[in-house]
Picture 1: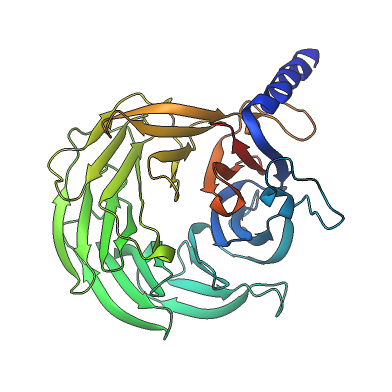
Picture 2: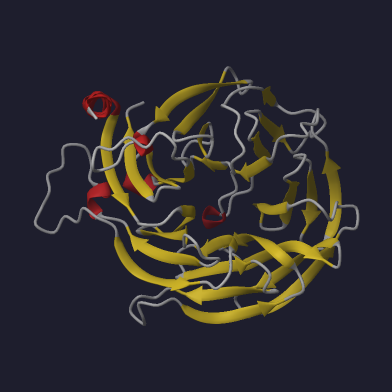
Length: 372
């Protein structure tokens, strides 16, 4: 017990040198994923222990997280997360996405053959209100959302073939179906926008990815990684930010064996960066979050109880560890949680430069601004 207290005390006192802000919150359930719903709130998907279903919560961020350095509290300063609304699912959640700034969340549940869109307006109800059930034959669908065009991609397996459905959430219509019989029906594929008209779909088993043209539904090309790792799962993210209508030419891929690759889509023959053993090996899902104000910075979670800030250096040819957030190993009660694993990280540029919100499977939530 004394040793635990000493470890916490050392970390706590060192935190004054490492953070401008550090706030600890928590829920009583493991956190599966997290998405920004607007500039002042986030959506959490939480597992219900011992049950198949999930609890989805829309939480308002405390205004203390928005304070600038040396700003004093006022009588109206809020310090804790506030539940705005929520809902429960009957089945295991496969994916959750939000329609940023438009009070909507989209849920894909296991084995139900549909994707559901919910209204999250707390002025109407403290319950998320079901708006649309998109019936489809796609199993265990993964999602991608472009909030500028209200476009939803639903990607999963249909009749032993992977299929993509393009759905317009503005008028609730399916606009396009994408079928590619070359994909392996035994693998999991995840879609990601790279522009409003282009999609990349990754095979999580071997890291290879396919490019699609959303105006025609045509398959453009397939890219295989330089070497296979049969024991690793792969995860991908892009710098595409639909809220700013930008287009990205860069992809970042990370395996849970610790390897990182980046690609420039103008030349996919070889990766622009390829680094092994950048992170400790694990069997977990990895979350990659790119800094919207500085695409040279990545926040990576899921390997262990830490969040790693990685910076691109040396003329975009090398990566280095810039910061390691170890806060999830500690609780507000000063207990040591050595076995926890981080699950999601979001950059919060509206709260100041280098400010993030991170979650872990022990239910801990932390807002922090590191000193770079």
